[in-house]
Image (cartoon, rainbow, N blue to C red; front, side, top):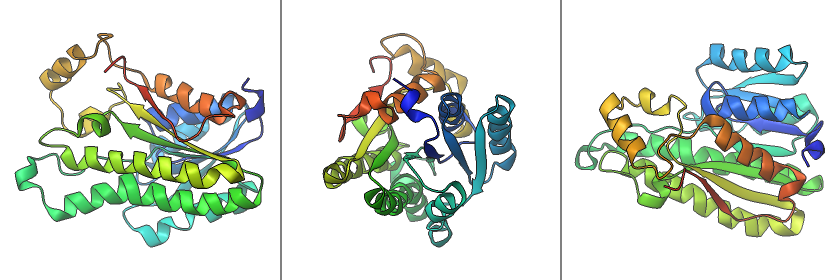
Length: 251
């Protein structure tokens, strides 16, 4: 059922590591042509490209800092110009900025968290939507978080609310895209062993306690999320839109 992905043009944002890298490599393994986006980690993004090309896959690098949105607005147009079109957009890039108690959270951390997790995916989708509308449809897949379900914690409430907003955008775009065969879904990830939690300075004890709360008793892997994205982009997802798929080990 993944034969339909051969030669599809796919943009994966935040593909330097973790879920983004795994998703890019998985798409490329099924014959897709991948646009590998990164913000700062050029070395990591290049490793993604090298891994794809070493297996005779096709991938191109694109750099954009989503915290500076005027430059971000060019990404979709640059990808379309370079690759000749865009069939699938995977809004994976995101981050938690300011992991401090909500009573001390500053406005800058709130705004930047929303810029990366809601604003950028929305306006990238807006650009992609216009192209897909003129070219027979496409797929938009947003990477959300279990934080949207629980509302985050005292130190991640702004991140959880941003991901909840992204899920609302997902549902709204799905209704608007249906008549144009633009299918829009989200993958809500639980605790994934991708390095994300180490980056935001979780302690080993916090990570251990968090894993213990997962019903399956183990963290997810980037491949677990990537396979769901691949499924939704393939012909297996031809009649699926406006859905939030949770990959969380039962959390």
